[in-house]
Length: 191
Image (tube, rainbow, N blue to C red):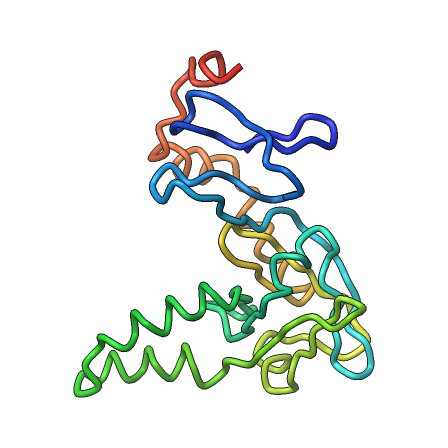
């Protein structure tokens, strides 16, 4: 995806050409599926109110209008799935044998904390107390909403500050990006 001014362009033919995606702030054309996929991008700081409501950033709100599910993340954060992505997760877990203890643990992690989280007319979702406790998010405090491609993460401000220490390490990032093969010349082919 490339953003030029306020115009959004997306890769067509796996990087050979860019095209505008009408009316979509965070979209790309999947080279695999051949259809538009939504992406969550950016970092936003918002306060959670005294009723446990968090305003979803307006730039990503449209992607959750058809429904969303919020659940525990892999670390001490909350993970927000679109309804479609959560349905795919549900379908994948239906193939797991319940006789395997690891599968049962996975099902508990995935579903025991899951809660519907469709934004209201003001773009707010309710974060239940047990999920706030898990992520260390207090009422009337700041939290950080982070776009990570197919999902959103919701962090306590302190938790995100700790993550930034890991995320912003130049030596580790060099190793992380090495596997992506970001060879020079790709930009010239797109431009």
